[in-house]
Amino acid sequence: MNNAPQENQLVTGFRDYGYRVLEKEHEAHLQNFIPNVLAVEDSLEYQIIIRGTLERELHLFFASTIQQAKELLNCHEIHLILLDVLLPDGSGFEFCNDLQASAATSKIPIVFLTSKTGITDKVLGLNLGADDYITKPFAPLELKARIESKLKKSLLQEQSDLQLHRGHLRFDTLTYVVYSIDNENSKLINMTPIEYRILLHLAQKPGRIFSRNQLIESVWGRAVHINERSIDKHIYTVRKKLGPHGQYIKTIPSLGYQFNIDNLKIEEMEPSHLAPLFETNA
Image 1: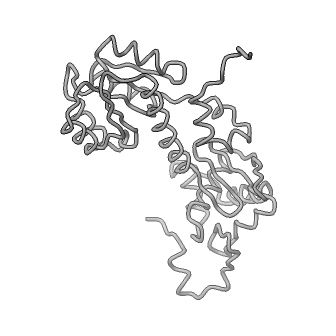
Image 2: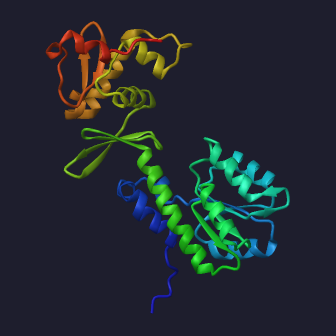
Image 3: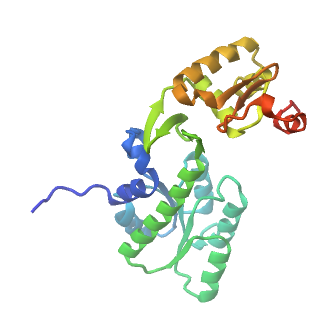
């Protein structure tokens, strides 16, 4: 019989659903990722139960009041909130509404964990935007399963939002890296931060033509004075590092550069098609 401790089940499930590709690419900082959960609960008894149920799989933060919860949200990246309704300094329902109204917290999944068992309360909580509503007392295994399910779904969506695919290139805006994808195999392309930002800026608006000054402003900002020709040197290096995919970056004579995966040539375009593609400074 194998008595070896099992691998962290929630982290394993998280990788399977959200970061399997990155795990194969040896992104150690994401392999060992453990989500942060904020429990807004004033009962010491339930804090102990929550800690015993989830502590081995998650980074837990506890707040006994709404004010403490706000302070923790300002200091830490939180991936899910367990929220009681009856709190010393206010209503969990009102706090949930405030979280949903704020751009900084609106995407954080909220799971109510409360002794308010009425159907009206459940409907109100879910209508306010909560992802789940669990009543006390609860079965620890059920709580764990529900939290795991919400985290997998949320983090998978977050990972999808943080990736940009262009042709045979995949950008990971969370880790600021770009991969070359060929025949389902991916290869990390080593780039400096400047090179990555130039490439990403072009790739985010394929077909648009950017002048050298526009690229300088987007990468270095307006306060920094950079020789226009330094962009040409960086573009040359980026193309070289991209290998066969370097052809995605087009040089548009007298205008600047364009990211185009369709091999569209500027001389093949009618003049009326040129204006919408050229981005001018505001």
